[in-house]
Length: 372
Image (tube, rainbow, N blue to C red; front, side):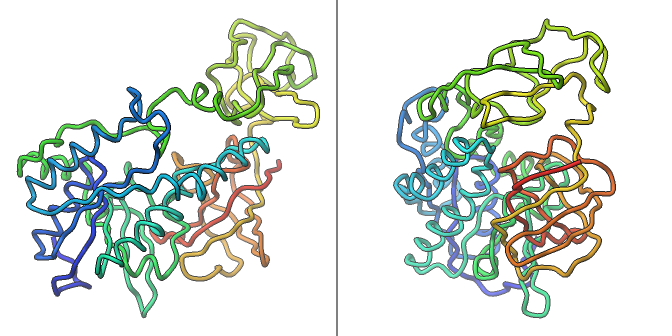
């Protein structure tokens, strides 16, 4: 594998997380003849000795990888930046009843801002991470592309990167399938070759999410009602629920007969709306209930990898784990509207709506509202 746009050796600083993707990233760059330096980013300090989020264990893994590959590694603490730039915004969004995506903000504010700045101070010409995405330069424009492994593509989380950031970034594993990354790791004897992928978000790790939020958000219990307004349970605080949520509602055995347009009596319940003024959670029965479907959304807090596209028929994702959905894009100065060909499920304020032109990620915005 070669980097056609970067034939000469460069000083590249790699974010080593302790996982296999960033480890193989460092190895591939070293094989290319680049001068590679590893940096381990510590982004969270509160209760970091817990079973769910011990950065000490990850640092040991990252240091062992650096030793096998034969590169230096530096431990850098970005926890203060993280609390100011990411965590504070994360809590504000939850308190406003929205569901933010902290990994998007973490990439924009920490990994490709604080980390990039630090790497440049170390004399780096480029940085690299283990994300499954690609960068391509076309006529002087740096395009963000989907990773070649469709099951692992992470361009959604990177859509807020700008031209300056993309110009300085390499994503070596974005050219590979995950199975190939694992094979390379085993082939070169990396100690973390079989380490399971992290499924936790960037600072919370894999600890129980509601338990974590309990420490930071006020509790204001209130009623859970069905679409007709009939009370069927009690919620523990609107901040702790997200649209489309099925688990943890505490109403599994409840039936409401004659529910219009819903599923049968035994269909599972899903969160459909939050009424902040009345502190009420509205739930419906059935995955495909009309209240869970939206044909339009409006987004603000926009970010474009190059420039805002013209109004056109394109594709978008309103959540990470979904296929690109055909839609009509209509842009304004600070907002855009998407009208989808097919209704989208559980479009959630606070999440990101990310736009694509084929394999090219154009950017996106934060979902402000959705409608049928």
